[in-house]
Amino acid sequence: MEWLKDYWWLILIVLVGIFINTIKDLNKTSFKKYIDKKNGVKPIPYDDDDDDWPDHKTPKK
Image (cartoon, rainbow, N blue to C red; front, side, top):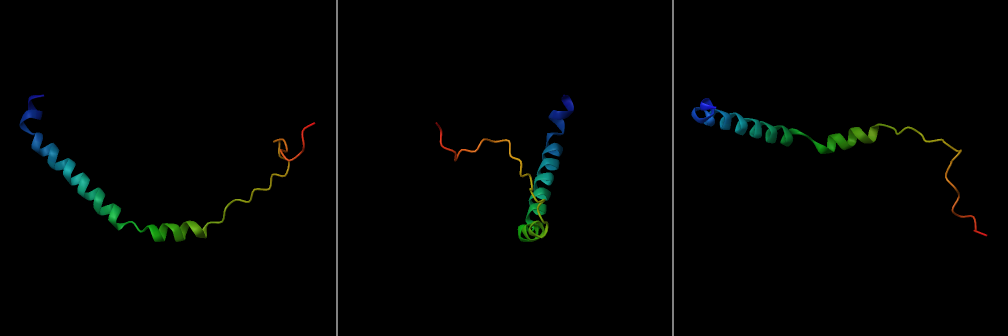
């Protein structure tokens, strides 16, 4: 752990570099393109007609 006392500033520089690169990459992302791409994908149709859930609209006796 003696090296950590001597080279703490190198670790700090690496962490700051990672932080700056992350912010740059997040600024490059286009959320409009993501939403447009997502809207182009059609959802899987749900055609399960035999529900196992009870019908709540029937009156109780």
